[in-house]
Amino acid sequence: MTTKIRRTVAATGIAAAALLSVGVTAQPAAAGTCAIQPYGLIGDYWRALGGADSWFGCATVEEYTPANMTGRKQRFEHGQIAWSPKQGERMIVAAFQKNNQAVFRWGPTDPFHYEYFQVSGELSNGGTVLGTPMPGGTSGRYAVNVAKGLKITFWVHGCDQKFPARKLCRQGWTLPVSVTMT
Image (cartoon, rainbow, N blue to C red; front, side, top):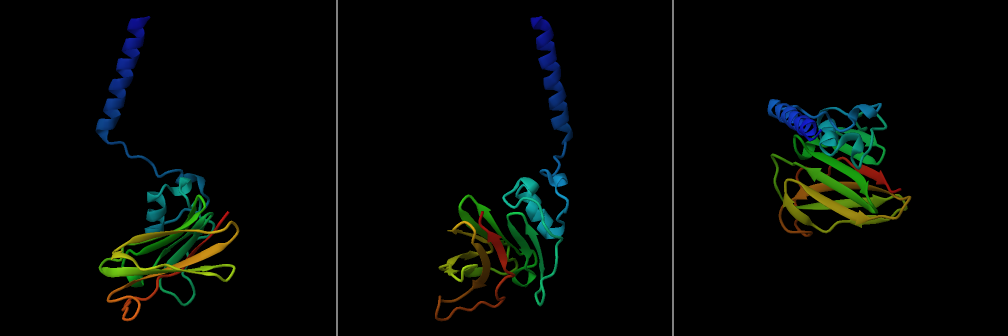
């Protein structure tokens, strides 16, 4: 009996090693469970964060171009992702809920590199969240506590020179992205 178990374990181990050596590629995280499949840069970003199992959940609408804006946007069960090319060829901005915080992420701004970023947020109850200057570079992250039931919309722009008197923000604000806290 012990010999049979050892042979089974050995055979299973050899089979697993063989599969690993062939380079089996994992499928995207539960992407097949969503009726709408994100694509392009927005889809790549969504899948990189876990697809349907990410903080975003599934897409609720197809990707679209917001009126009078350059870029693309998509709404998800728990946030939004947008491609905002005026601030960088592959610039993605995203808002989602993580526990009791609204999280806003952006980047990369390549080929642009900034001394600092300024984040702005607007709450559905009329309040505003003006982020203090954030460290510069090509990407960033901002998180803020927001009460349940409120929606917050974020924007960011990259700037150079001194804040706030002489700020120079050549590429302007990104597309806005929102999340409603549950």
